[in-house]
Length: 328
Ligand code: GLU
Ligand code: ZN
Image 1 (cartoon, protein in one colour):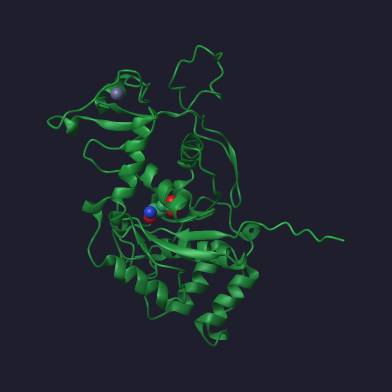
Image 2 (cartoon, protein in one colour):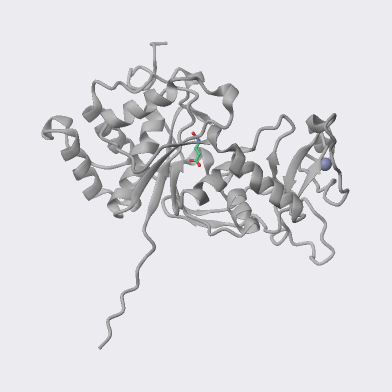
């Protein structure tokens, strides 16, 4: 009798920090959650430096981030990729989309879009605009979206519904229903020549074979749009899980601008225990583990998406140096 084994595709996850500042508690939470979800599924865990927005990146911070991860026993698989070194690959995709008529040039200014009611209405879709070398800085490139924003099942947060906005396009084939209309044509390359985050995050995840994305809830709202981009480009959509973000006050996530303290590399076990507690797990004291790898092994063993707190944001106490760089 033949034995048939249905093989799940191997899990590939990642952590994708932006090297605009050292890791703080909130980014350590994302690193740990994505690591544990990957390792508890016998997956690989890749690392990508999201330094596409080069003006905001600080040189040397990438090395700091890698060092912090290592100090916490969070060893990644394979080589680290840097977005700043991938421009050629991004440009090839953009050129191909332009050639295929799936992307187009747009000259609409912020002011014009505001006058459209705040949502770009497809104004330049069929104008066939073409820049010359003198006026390139007035043109953004947009992707012709063919898919709507849709609700989805997040493996941690549960059902997520897209934020309502006016249907950007009038379609003669559709009735008044907004649910079937396509998403706003997303900018894939900005007028200042930067590739946009919503393009490169997808191109890189596809390039690296990532099929599971565990990241902070600050990116929950943009996920329906990213899913629509995947579909428009014809790529297979990864599984998404979003974890709570650490915040200073409602709507303000812990960040360098909000005085987030860099992770203290001299107390890795204590930091990891705090991360687990923040995520909602009962976790033994740091002193009960001989070393970091024993602690992480326990964390992998008890990791359970269902146990993660379902609150998009958790306010962290202002008097604790784990979170803030100086007392108020
Ligand atoms: N680089 C992004 C950030 O630091 C994360 C992007 C993602 O995980 O998709 O917020
Ligand atoms: Zn336009």
